[in-house]
Length: 321
Image (cartoon, rainbow, N blue to C red; front, side, top):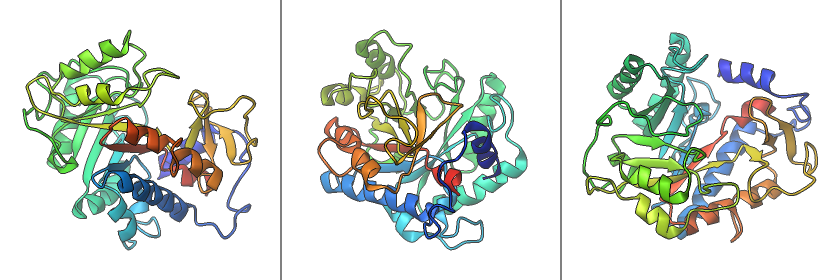
């Protein structure tokens, strides 16, 4: 994607790994394989476990091009796609996304949608008329959307009220979702109880949140069960955010002394998001942190009772390409 490549050039320091270092590596396929491995591992414990990659939508085709053949194995491993900035926020919050970029993204999103996948769009806008436009335009294309008035994803928007597509249904699958709340930064909530009470007073069909309330405190399975209750008596799905294309220095797995290049799979820091580091996501050492064992991030998410995982920084392949 043109914008993503431009931002990556701006956001990172000198690239310490590139295609020249791995001439035989297909960075797109390595990310597809990574997502598929996470999916396969998760579904051994829970066959209904939901897997949703965010961004990197080009992976739906084998060559990453608009005229490419579908990657059937990748599509079989996932339940939906998350996409940011489709109608608002691409160049700046509350600004309309350029039509050519919108059309480019929708070409791939529609391939996924036509393959039976649910499309979750997060637009970043705060003017109420633009928030309404975001909901209406996404709905016209058959996408489920959330108009985030804080890019930090740290609040529950007061608008619209009632929420778009509100219902009292018991939601058992991603295909039943009519709306969602993306709330992965709980710093504005004084306690886990405050967070839980705020969410359970809403009627969103799907909550995307973090496994951790703060850097060290995980939500328990009992707390996740409580979060699945809507205020109107319905039930929602609760899915955990997990970055797989970057390592975050505030996560439980981070070790003292780590820096770019040490361990070898840890690449440059993201200047736009301090504390986030690109990773050579194909390396077994990084994959072991994410899935495959009792101490892995994915296993923690499963043990906490989440319905699935929302995988971020899928577009990391662009950085290495």
